[in-house]
Image (cartoon, rainbow, N blue to C red):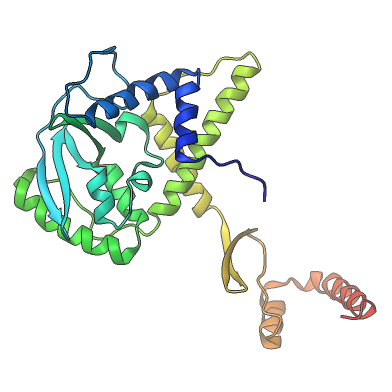
Length: 283
């Protein structure tokens, strides 16, 4: 537990405007593109240098509707992209902040021109990840609808959709974000120490994050407990024996099947000393 400083939306924008880091320059250019797209007048010319969140292409969108909410889909850069605002509405989110959170730059998130304005879009892989974060009762009907409407509009060129939503998508997504943050901290520590960090592309970073998330889950034993009705997940060692203290038959079976005979005297001695301590403490 620790204190965390939080900022309002206005404060976050102010930080982006005043920051002097290299990413902040691209952020400011992206904000200007968004503001230009919110007006009916043509945007003023500005530095045409590419930014991580922009694309010079003008894609053609197909307008779909899900439960009364418009969802725009387009083919761009060899893949399918989805309007994040419409996807947020389809999944029941008030804004697209939860849609765009954690996506890795232009590889998954872009802002493209659309009808004189701009539209934030995410790629197919990111869409599946975002839908996996949503509650199952919302995600499953949406995926069933999408599996019908996309082949109907795009035929054999429609993207492949999974039979069901991965229930671990949210967990693995959070683990990946932790891995990305850890990489950034490592790079900063090496740089501050005067060293140099080898460059690797976003694909390599993604693969490392995937492996890290898989190891976090597969190479651990997990114990799910409830404290006042609140679920608590704890990692336990591989050689840990879980014991139900209210079931004496369970205890006897564990002692008979899993405890070597040579270890029984030490185990009994330890148990007696602990019980004596509990009696002296009045418990």
